[in-house]
Each structure stands twice: as structure tokens, then as C-alpha cells.
Image 1 (cartoon, protein in one colour):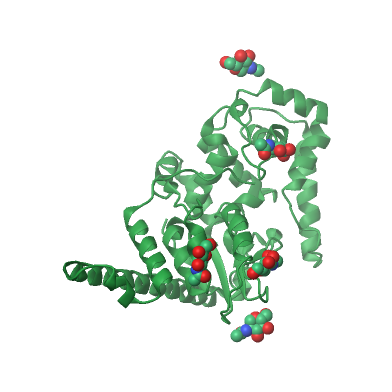
Image 2 (cartoon, protein in one colour):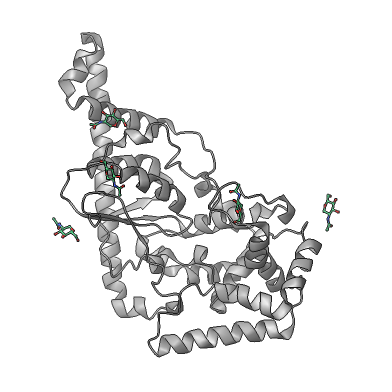
Length: 365
Ligand SMILES: *[C@@H]1O[C@H](CO)[C@@H](O)[C@H](O)[C@H]1NC(C)=O
Ligand SMILES: *[C@@H]1O[C@H](CO)[C@@H](O)[C@H](O)[C@H]1NC(C)=O
Ligand SMILES: *[C@@H]1O[C@H](CO)[C@@H](O)[C@H](O)[C@H]1NC(C)=O
Ligand SMILES: *[C@@H]1O[C@H](CO)[C@@H](O)[C@H](O)[C@H]1NC(C)=O
Ligand SMILES: *[C@@H]1O[C@H](CO)[C@@H](O)[C@H](O)[C@H]1NC(C)=O
């Protein structure tokens, strides 16, 4: 599903806030805090604490802003427009909530689309469920990320940032074997970019699967929609034959996929209804106009937002001390470098595909 998270240096501001939050939690009151220091330091500490409170207020109002922004944009868009999106074939069948709390198991839910910190949340939610929290407030959370930064992250993860396929080694349980990646990602991308020419049965198979899917949706049969991406692997295997698929894998083991070729593959997969689960718009994944999301976490800021929020919801966030959860992903500032060389026409197609993500969450192009 995803690679091990990348290491990124901690940001000083985040660190200060985080330590501050921990101290407040541990002591619970400012008097105790102040007693630890002499008079000369007092002024300093009061300033620090004021800054902290100021930061919390900022986070809080930012959460409120995002939540009402989503609600407003959904209203403007209208449910009908959202449901009638041309990507309706992907549906909301992926809507996946993780439950965080251990008391009623329905109080704290989070929707985490793939490539937006999902792996970290799997680990984290297991730890959170060990805690007995006492809060009575229900909350629905989700994580989002700039759509272009998410695409770059997929390219780095699934297409090895342009390295030869032969360099692939899975590092964790959440990853898949070389053969699996070959037939699911690399070989289809080589075909789309005309570096492997497929038998005609390949395109026929893709078209058939797509027609079947659309017919089912038109007839209201959505139970089979599921992972439409599987149609791609099935068609690869049936049209080439599994021996040939293997053989081609050996032949192309040193090949690689450029970023533009990856973009071509994303566009092609949408147009043929075999888009990969990892690059489905997260607006669809989390059914954002039908659910009410109280807290929308930006992956880029998760280092500060996640501990803040969990503390607010009543969790003991000391578990963050020695974990690598919620590291900021530094691709946020570099996705532009990747997209700079993509022709305008393709870029516009990408905006079109992810327009709900851009629009509903207020991300700028
Ligand atoms: C929280 O959610 C649970 C389960 O859905 C529900 O029974 C309960 O009434 C909710 N509590 C509040 C305060 O809304
Ligand atoms: C709930 O928390 C208790 C400890 O407080 C723990 O023993 C139990 O395993 C937890 N349940 C789940 C489902 O994690
Ligand atoms: C790599 O992936 C394979 C197949 O998915 C799995 O069996 C194996 O355990 C993985 N290796 C590691 C180190 O996790
Ligand atoms: C791939 O590259 C390695 C190292 O350069 C080379 O030994 C190997 O023969 C190459 N394999 C193919 C299939 O070209
Ligand atoms: C939080 O957890 C840590 C250890 O995991 C524990 O030492 C601490 O007392 C806990 N704090 C509260 C307020 O329960």
C-alpha cells in the first residue's frame, strides 16, 4: 500500500508547541509550572505560554474554518453535482473509517484516504484504542493533502521516483512483491506510454470491463464496483498470459517511468475506469459532502495538528514521544518542481480530474 515514511527534520516551531503541550498535560496547571523556575524566568515563561495558547487558538480556528469551508462548498456545489461527478464509477465504496476510541467505538472516526497518512493512522489507532478515554464528544475526522503533492508522493512510492524497477525492495508489511507491482503499476504504465505494445485483446478487455461497470452503476448495482483497478491486472494477465507477463518483467527490469509518463498513466486510468485506489480523489473516497467532518487534518501540518486534536479529544498523547507518527512530508514544497515540466494540456486534465479535491477543500492550483 505505501512505503515507510520518509525521514524529515523536525521543525522548531512544531517542536516547541509539542513540548509545551506535553508539559501542560503533565502538570495540568500553570502554578506548578511556574514554581519550577525562579522569578527571572517568569516573564519568559508567561510569554511562552501565551504563545502556546495563541498557537492553539490558531489551530482551533483553522479547524473550524476548514470544516465550514467544506460544508459551504458542498452546498454551493449541490449534492446532485457531487453525486453526478463523472467519476461516479469509483463511488464511495472505499469509504473507510478507522475507529480511534475504545469506549463506544463509534465516537471517534477518521477517514484516511490512501497516501494521506493512512499507514501511520493504522499504527496510531491501535495504540489509541488501548486507552480508556472519558470524553463524551463524538468527532469525525479526515486527513487531506494537496492533490498535486499527493500525486508526487504516489510517484515516489509506486514508481520509485523514476528509479529502475530492479531497485525495488519492499521494506514493510504494507508493501507488495516485485511481481505484484510489475503487473499492477509498471507494466500498465509502459503500455500506456507505448513502450510495450499489447495484444488487441488488452484494450478490448479494458473496454469491456469499463462498459460492464458503467452498466452496473446505471442499473444501481454498486456492490460490484469495488476495486475497479483489479480489472486492469485481470486484463493484463488474460490478454498477455501470465508467462509473458513474467517474461516482460525480466526484460524490462531495468526500465523506469518518468514523471510525465506517470501523469499519462493517471489520466489514462481515469478515462478507462481503472484508476488505482491510491489516486482516487479523496473527496470521493471519504464521501465528503454526505458525511459531516468536524476536523480536517492537513497532512502537511499533522505534526502539530494531530497531537493537538487528540489531546482535545481526551487521549494521552505521550505516545507521540517516541514514535515517528505525523511527520510532515516535505514534498509539499517540491511538487511544483515535478509538475513544472508537465505540458499545460495534461496539467489541465489533472486539475479536471481532481477538481473536487481542489474546490471543496480550497486548495490552490
Ligand atoms: C455519539 O455516537 C454514539 C454512537 O453513534 C451515539 O450513540 C451517541 O448518542 C453520540 N453521542 C453524542 C453526544 O452525540
Ligand atoms: C481497551 O482498553 C483496555 C485498557 O484500557 C485494553 O485492555 C483493551 O485491550 C482495549 N480494547 C481494544 C479493543 O483495544
Ligand atoms: C514483501 O512483500 C511480500 C509479498 O507481499 C511479503 O510476503 C513479504 O513479507 C514482504 N517483505 C517484508 C520485508 O515485509
Ligand atoms: C540490468 O542492469 C544490470 C546492472 O547494470 C545488468 O547487470 C543487467 O544485465 C541488466 N538487466 C537487463 C535485463 O537489462
Ligand atoms: C500518559 O501515559 C504515560 C505513559 O504512557 C503515563 O506515564 C502518564 O502518566 C499518562 N498521563 C495521564 C494523564 O494519564
